Length: 180
Image 1 (cartoon, rainbow, N blue to C red):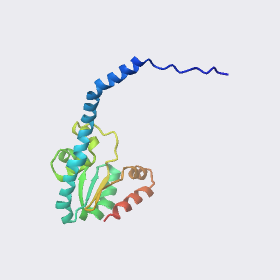
Image 2 (spheres, rainbow, N blue to C red):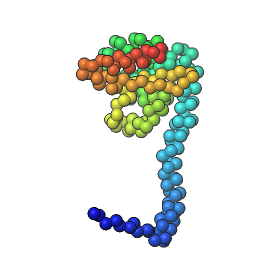
Image 3 (tube, rainbow, N blue to C red):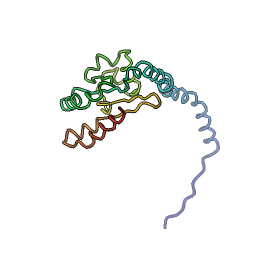
Image 4 (cartoon, rainbow, N blue to C red):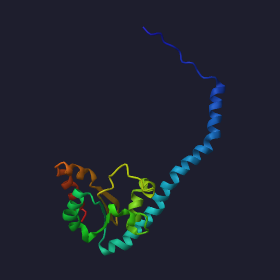
């Protein structure tokens, strides 16, 4: 049978030293937290509402409420151009991810919206480094005046479609068409 051991308490001066170090480092910890949180707050509470107001004032009166991003992937592009884009083109602004060098850094509303709603990856795009995740492509962002933007990702559905399973793709398409 194991022998029970008593836990030894730290001396008072070790606890006092720990508290003192924590107090001395708290400004640095706070500064690091601010550096990490302020960009998120700026995007979330200043830039995004401005962009959504612009969508409400510029796109919605024209009947445009979908931002659709697709790429030149052989299988995906053909499917998108034959099946999805014709059905949504009247209500959509369409961006080709493969041509992003032409639009990703522009001040156009659609580029700003895409960058803002995908803000975590923006620095990676600016450095032109290959993306780690690919859930941005094919992507539909649906804007409604009374609700927050709805992101509909086609990426996983197209990965299944590549292997002959189209159930998930049809489901995602129906989710987009329900917004029309």
